[in-house]
Every structure is written in structure tokens, then in C-alpha cells.
Length: 526
Image (cartoon, rainbow, N blue to C red):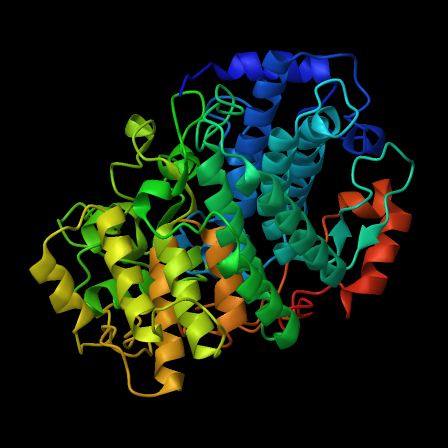
């Protein structure tokens, strides 16, 4: 796949009439990016690549990782999923505080950049458009579902069908309606992509994930379809089963081999998002990750993290107070950063995870426990294949090591820290004999396999309740006590909406199912 410099993307985006994430005015935030002057296919390639990168909350320019990825994804989803613990004294979000400017960063970036750019692609490739192309349009549909899913999973009801309409008010859609549209888009995309048998690639220059490989986009479409179906399984079991079985049976197959993993390529100009902020020394491995990885003797520990300055792998409890952050044991030098393969100096090395075979296999394992039609495998075989796939993805290939891990009977470990933190509750890796244990094992192994993609991991922790994470040491949010690690169900709406789109915000609140608080559950999480 050919690469290009981010400045080219920005140049073309200026032509397309999109705006940077520092947008302040609603007119800019809600600009209809589809109403632009005529563009050509080369320009469209660059706009699509920008929609991909910014659809993962990637920054607008090199070294701009602080906004929005750090303030939105890292300080909320990553911390709530307990992949990392924040170590900055200004990181109130790890104590369950909703920081308005940080929420604004994620919201404005998404709607004024990622959504605006993808809207251009969809408008320009639809039937009757100058650049009409059903394959490109189908690929754009898949990407729309992928990038909108964490947005609705963070907030609930959001602007969706009217987003970027250029009007003076943008009404919100309910999360139920959004998910039902996800299923519609993915079904349509599969019908188009799976019917294509040619060898020509689409978005070959602009596709940062597959280089335009249509067959791999078809598999990504179907696996994403299964993810969306499983997400609603506790709210609408019949709908979930219908959609999951349709995804599993859909033409073109799913991502069940690491060769088909959806991984976004990184470079000096499009860096790995976690790597961009790793040198800020504002987060380290969480205590939850330490307890699970050490307790299971997990060979991925040294793949995920680097040892501290003393050569040990150490994590930190979530929810540190400002005083606790200043304690020597919680100093960044005494705790593990992400592995050097992600590190700032090597940020072109590790790709950014979008979707992997391991996730598909764990979804299939859960589908089997739900008694859905899900292929020839069993819950146990899919579970074990999921572990195999994750190990291989991270470069663990010794069959003896992997088999020992899969048959392991150890449980999460106590930390031996200054807080006398006990072992995190959890079942061993060896596949259990009861459905209750098996669901916990699948959820926990999926949590490990999703690392470091906290946006998806937090959604799954909320849906499944697994793993059983530590309570926070402190919470500065009276609605979300530290004693309940699952007290934060969603993010509150960003302050910018109250002033820029008051009518739209009111429509969202009416569809939210509760007050605009962190304790209001999402539609799919009853």
C-alpha cells in the first residue's frame, strides 16, 4: 500500500470544506461537508484516509495526540476499562469526573472532522453522483458503522441521521434506532462487497487498513456485524440472534485468521494513537492488568508492557488522588509503560488495532453459549482458538507455552502494594464446567485480546460485567462511588451542545432514557 504525508490530507480537506477540531462555532461543527466543489478520485482517496484516521480519534497533525485521543479515548475509555491508570495530577477523569473541555474535544473532533470527511465519501460515491461507485460506497458504510459505534456507546443518543446536515439544529437519534441502522448498513454493504469477484482494489492509495482489498473488507463487515449484534443481546435477544446468525452466515466469511486482521498502518505522520501520548508520562499499566496478567502467567505481559526502572512489571490502582499520585510507588518510573514497540520513538512500528480474529472467535464462543447457530465449533473450541489467535497476534508462538496457558488453573494475583490490594476476582484460564464461569472466561480473555483498544473494551466490560475490575481508590463524582467499578455507565454530553445545539440536545435527552448523568444506562445495557 502506498503511503502519503498528512499534509496532503489536510490540503485536500481544506478543498473539501472541512474544519479542524478546534472548531468553536456550531455553523462549522454542523457544516454539510457533502456540498463541495467537484473533486476527483485522487482527492477522494485522501479524504477517505483522513476519515479513517480521524474516525479513530486520531489527531489532526503530527504530535497532536493530546487532542482528541488523549483527552477522550485514553482518559475515559482506557481508564474505565482499566487498561491504564492515569498518573497526571490533572487527570480528574480517572476519578470519574466529566471534564467539559475534554468531552468537547472528542465530540467536536468527531463531528467536524471524521463525520464530515466520511460524508463527502458517501455523497460522492452514491448512485447518481459524479464518482458513483458501489464498492467504495459499501466500504464507506462499513467504516461509518465502525466509527459511530464508540460514539453512541460513550454517550447513548447522539446526532446520527442528521449529523452534518448544514441546518441550524441537529436532532439526535435514539441508540436503538442507530443500532438498527447499523444492521441495515452492514447488510447492504455485505450484499455489494461479497458479490464483487474482481481483482481491482478500491481506495488502494487511501485505505490505511487493507489497501483496498475488497475480500478483507467483506470479512471486516461481517465481523463488525457480529460485534454489533452481540452488543444488543441483553436488551433484545431476538434481534441480536437474528442479526448475529445473519452475520455468521453472510457471504464472504469473517475475520478468523490473523492474516485478515483490520489493523491501521501507522507512520511518523499517522502515529499509533497510544504511542503518541506514551511519552507524556501521564498513564501507566493498571493494577487490573497486573493482577490478571501476572496471575495467569500470561506470556503477553512483556508484549503489552515494559518493565519499570527496576526491571519489574508493576501497575497502579485507578482513581489516585492528587496526593497519592505524588507517592513514590505511584511514580511513573516505578510502574510499567506500554511496550517499546508502541513507544513514541518507534511509533511507525505497531499498527493500530481495529478488529482482530481473536475478537471474532470470542464472539462466536459467546454465540454458542447463547445457543445461536454459529458454525461447527463449540464454545470451548472457539474460546481456545481465540486465545491461540491472540497469542499469535502478539508473537507468542511456542505451542508448549500456549497449551500450558490454556490449561492453567491459577487465578489473578494479589499486588503486594502499599494499599494491600488483593487479587482481582476471576476464574482460571482452563475452560470451566459451568456456563457462569465460561461467560466470565470469555469476557476476560476478550478484554485481554482487545488491548489496547479501550473504546471497545469499556463497552464490553459494561455489557458483560467481565472482568470483575477493582474499585477505584477515589471518586470525585458524587453520582459514581469509588466502591463500584461499574458506576460510570456513559459520558455526559459535552458542554458545547448546550450552547451550540440546544434543541438537538433536548431531543437527545428525551431519547436517553434517563438524566444526563454517568449513571444512566445505555439502551443496550439494561
